[in-house]
Length: 309
Image (cartoon, rainbow, N blue to C red; front, top):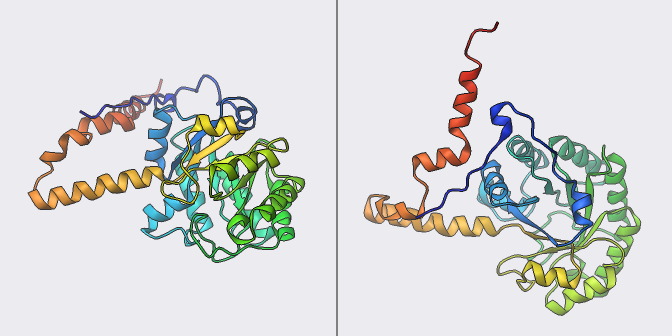
C-alpha cells in the first residue's frame, strides 16, 4: 500500500505562515550537514517538502531530462529555469538552491541570471566554470573557461544580487580537465572572488573527497554532489558530514527513480491492457488530490463566492 504524505499549506487557506524558513546561510552554518534532494517541478518540490526537506536543489539536469527528454548538455534556457523556479516558489516555501549552469553566458549574462532567478525565488545559485557547450559534471569531454573569467562571473553575481542572503555557490569541473591540484587552486580563487560556498565537482574517490575537505573546508562551506552511477562514489550524509561537508545534493535521483517506475507502469499497462496490477504501487485519484491540496483549494475558492458585507 502506498502511504500518503499530508502537506499542509496555510496559503491555500488564506493564512500567513507562522514563521519564515531559516535562512539558507544560517542553516549552512550549523550541523548536521544539509541534505538537499533534487527537484524539477512544483510536484517534486511538494513531495520533498512533505518528506521534511529543509532545502531543495532545482536540478538543471532533471529539468532537461523531464522537460526536454534530453541529456544535460546545456539545452535548457535560462528563462525555462526561471519559469520553473517561479512555479516551484508559488507552491512551497522551502529554500531553493538553483542550478545556474555557467551563468548562461559572460559576466553580464551572469548578472541577468542572478536577478531573474532571485526574483523567481532562488535562495542560492550554483554556477560552474565550464564553457559552451556545457555538460553534466559526470560526463566526459568537459571544457573550462579561464580561472579569471570564472572569478569575474562570481564577482558579477555578487554585485547583482539583491540580498546578501542569496548565496553564490562556485563549482569547478577542473578535476576531470586539469587535475586535482588545479581544481583546488581554482576553488581558492573563487573564494577570493566572493563565493559563499565551494563545490569541487566529480572527485573520483572517498580519498579525494577527504582531500577537498582538508584543502578547502576551513575557508568556506563545502558542497558535495551524489549521482547514482556517477564518477563520485555514493556516500551517505553522515559520512560526508564527518569529512567536513556542509551541503550534499542528490540532484537527479528522483528522475531515475520515477523513470524506472514509469517504464514499468507503461510496460504493464500495454501488456495487460489495464493498470489494475499497478494499483498497490500508485496513488489513487482521491489520494493524489489529497496530496496536492485539492479539497483545500476548492474550499478556498468557495470562500470567495459569498456576498461581501
